[in-house]
Length: 223
Image 1 (cartoon, helix red, strand yellow):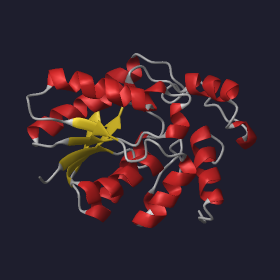
Image 2 (image 1 turned 45 degrees about the vertical axis):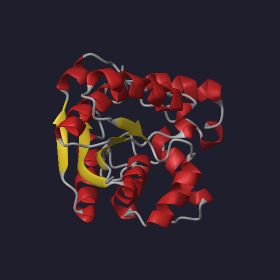
Image 3 (image 1 turned 90 degrees about the vertical axis):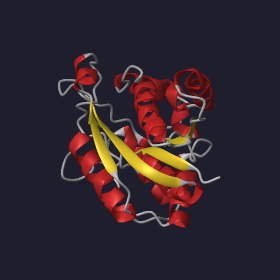
């Protein structure tokens, strides 16, 4: 049976690698990018759009202004400081749990998946593809395998008998392993955006930038 999928695409490393793998595992019908007022939204949308053009896949942006209104996360609140931890502290759970709290958005991934489920059922898709990973699951529980299992159980009650499930081809990988997989899949590295900010260039100091840079360096990938 031919599998069909909807992919949640932010334009960053994890979701792009998951998209590239999804293209091998299924027919990707649509990529969705969410705009909830996050600082990086313009750059994420640009990256996702260009990646979809590169792969010749339909792309749609969903605007969620209410999510910005109900959270004070540093990702949307310009008055709050986005943490800039030292690279050597990325394995310190005490520090990274604190930085995760600063950029936490309530039920963000749960909301994204449920929106993708609406599209998946309407398009006759079997899969919702996300870019969750083992490294960030240590501080973001909605990146974990337990979360995926729980969401898939819930989807059994919210969709028609057609089975739709959430998968992440990067779920059990850390960032270095994801970079290696991206190299094997030949993803368009120059199109990615993996920064919490939305400037002309990546800041190089936020946790997202640091994890990406550390992984690329370990994999001998020149940025």
